[in-house]
Image (cartoon, rainbow, N blue to C red):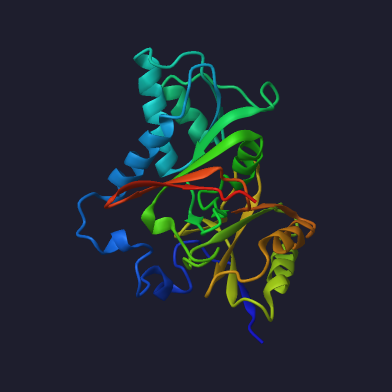
Length: 276
């Protein structure tokens, strides 16, 4: 029986480092000689996503380094007069500050319960366009806003493509309330005993800081690390996680992405959700 070990550490060192450098690249493009940096690839994907933005739209504004390029581009188009009457709903306080700085008018879900288009990055994308999000700590607000969207476009570079959720060896986050977090983390641990080999860690504010990381909602984050990804039915596992008292939300986004724009060294490609 394989066991999910529980520890309280910072998020810095993944417990399965060999998974960060797989023998096979995530796509054939990775074998090509590098011509663009990872940051340049992110920017390229973000700019293509912004081409979908039209004047008058209510936009879900994502969080993270890739989404930041989209914010900059939207702000630039507003200043140039190429976009008008845009309303942005930010997924984090950091995004709120960034969007305000580049001139994007802001609102919230109370005023705009239906979002025309959300643009955000992702930490992992599997072949069915299921995602891992929230390594930056904004998973709850991201899921609320992107779940209210008519269309949700994800922007990534090719390193984020995985065979299965959790397959990168990096964190699958779960946002939990601070009260009794040890009990909540223990119950999360119990879901995986005998199934997937994993570790569970309370995320810390920084490597040299023993204080817990606190989300914009005042919650903590438990990071789950899987040695070989999650092989079980994601819908069933999602329900099991959300039934644990003390869990606010998890970072597995199932069936939410309309399309994924992937920037690779051979160019930009688009993965569309398969019709059922």
